[in-house]
Structure formats: structure tokens, C-alpha cells
Length: 197
Image (cartoon, rainbow, N blue to C red; front, side, top):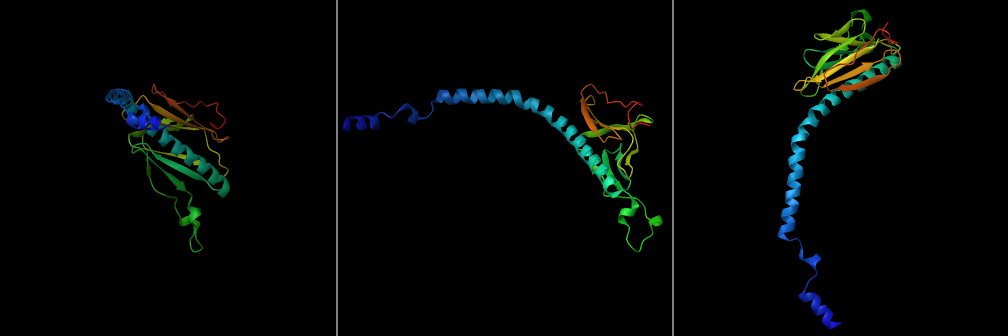
């Protein structure tokens, strides 16, 4: 038994010696090949994520506005600045009414402009009746019951104009659907939609 313990001290097992230089070189080569394939393609995912992120933020705010209009029993709206790639929520004047104010003298007010993600711009917004507005200010309105007309908001990437993200808002049901198109075609509205009258 003594001889066995002495033998183990003189000749350590292979697992206790560590890695050979060849094993380290092969591992480093494989890792560098993986990075060489992944890193150049990583840049393609970031702009698409910004596009989707901006669209989902607007979608969440529209859902919030629909809910607020129903709860408060007041008209609510979102204003899109199609030229400057920003948006804001517009509240009715009577929400800020105090006892010493007259409702007739108050104006609509908003929280402030929110910019879209970097590199994301509006490609248009509109409804089936008036078509797609490409410039200026566009307002999406919800009445006191949370209804609106069918509307579409279209976002695109500045660097890749063929990547288009369309948010379709159904006015009566409140359903919002989003679609990413990589050929530059926005989702279109038709006059037959349930809220397009």
C-alpha cells in the first residue's frame, strides 16, 4: 500500500497535469472561427431589433390610450410627427381642470415628444378613407368608448428602407397586429374593415 501512494506522487494522473499547448491552440482556433462567423452578422440583428422595439412601444401606448379613453370616458389621442420621427400622447383639456378654471378656456395638452429608436423613421400613417400620410403631423384618436377608425402606422429603417414594420389598428375590436416586411411593402387597409366607415 505504501508503494502505491509513492507511485501516485511520482506520476500524477493525466487529469491533474492540465491542458497541453496543442489543446489550447485548437480551442482558441475554434473560438476565433465562431466569432469570425457571428460578429459580422450581428450588425444585421441590431437595426431590426430597434425597428421592432419602436413599433412595440407605439403599440403599447395605443393600447394604453384605448384603455384610458374607456376608463375616463374622454377622447384620447396620439400625435405622430412623421417628419421628425417622434410621437406624443395628447390629453383632453378637461383632465387638467381645477376648480378655478373654465373648461372653455383650456386647451389640449401633452406629456412631451418621444423619439423613435436611432435609425428608425416613420414611413407613413393613415386610414383606408384618406390613405397614407407621408409628412406632417398625424393624429390617432380614440373616442370616449375607446373606439377609432381602422388605422395603420408604418415604420422603416433609414439605412435599410426595404425593412418595413406595419402596425394595423382595428378601431372597433381594438385588435392590433404587427407585420415585418423585408421587401418594403407596408400593410394596407381596405374600406371593408369593421372600423373603416
